[in-house]
Image (cartoon, rainbow, N blue to C red; front, side, top):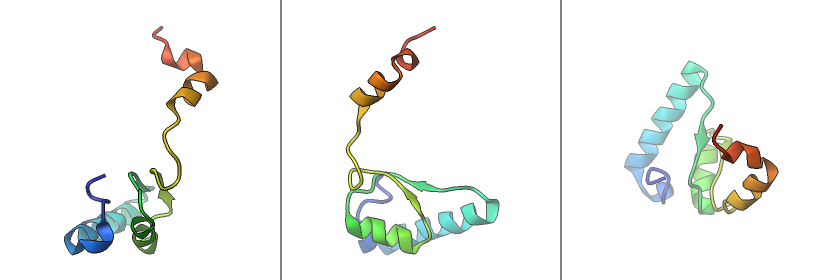
Length: 77
């Protein structure tokens, strides 16, 4: 998440992310950006070609809902 935080203001992190995006495209790897909290972060990452993102900007974690959907998944065998 620290790589994404305020990335629209940090040229060094922008260069790192652009490099990772290029590498993933070359290798056929789908890339998911995590920890997106601000519109500016989303916009920069989208401009880099990242289309899969998650973070507080989109939704808060819903751990209790997950336990209700599949309670057996949270139990040890």
